[in-house]
Length: 580
Image (cartoon, rainbow, N blue to C red; front, side, top):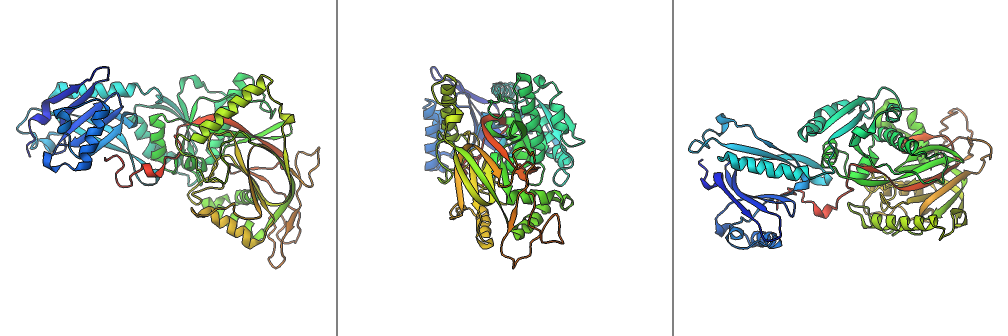
């Protein structure tokens, strides 16, 4: 098929007064003539197939007129716009490159024309369930000058994307999850980084906390970000290493729970390759390596709250998702003994812990987050560009500034609330803790960057009621807090003291009470006996924490991720989101 001559050499530059130029050309895409537009003012790149005027739909005409009315354009060019096409924000273009000419494939198509020239645009295309893919479209023309002009214009706009990383430090955990971390990076991620002209220094970890230790020594000034390939455990290593390094460089003593920590401005990217990938799922919306890699390439930035856990004046750990005592602590303790089962160990451990039906006595003291906008029960989920996160963080900063100036009472004078009782679970969710098995998470309305955590107290109840509570985590239309034995609070700090904790002991012993005896207790320490005394632990982002008497404090927006939060589902078109 011979393409129209005008698709090869037509270019219009429409430049209204006091507005950035709009570059327009009629180019060839495969065997079709397309009108291609680059609006540097709006930051939009679009192409639409040229069709006879009678084929235009009313919706297409309205869209074309609205698009060009926004740019102040009128006249014959607007009237020639076709009815449908693609619109891609320049910020979501991965790269632009000159395309190689395959004369055998395109010889017949271009036999009546001059030697063709082409350029390829790689861009992000949204798919179902927050999944992103890198798509490519090639534009052809016979004018070499026109082709170079488009390449230069697009690359100039991409160079203005200052938030995009150029050099990254990558840590790969080859043992996490199904032990496919290195393969996932080499097959799916590295080619995308190369396409976007991102250079990397790759370190394959060889032992536990290798990444954390390395971050204390490496020169971070030459990197634009850190990428971890693995699960939540690998992310925790990088998190501890980066925060610890920044506090060390700024002279902050992280053993003092009341001292504000220095913010970490270097972003962290997560390539999911673990068993749960909770942090990635809650910040991106899906556990997909390609999607996460594209977020890194585009230079997305999502602030994230981090909570510090202390035992009196001793720092223990940082957590960004779940700090759970009781049921979730027992699950992770049991799963550590069955790592040979792989991801299935969580199912086995959860079932075994559920049959045990233990509860623990203790005292929970907490400070409510009075400045916070919203509540854990308002069903307002955290999404990309979350208003509640912006509003809450602004109010928190104003309060901290006032406290620094001595305009408000200090922390000792703030009111604490105390709850005593027998608990099946004591959970603090810094984020929703959503994962593929629990799409809503432990606390669906928890926010990523509002400086708060949701404290969930599950009191002693029957096995049936506790099972109903657990099942509601897997359903999208059920409220897991709608039980008389479940209380939830939005807090900024809390303390937990077991009933039998001794003041001078660093490790505490809990008395676990067993429910009705018609179910046999499964004692993990003494399977052959019927003893009721066991030790529970804290589940800190999937890792065990043996100290039971702890204090947790939320630090607002302490770190940043290569992410943008979960986008609203109604903004996505399941079939072809980039097609308009």
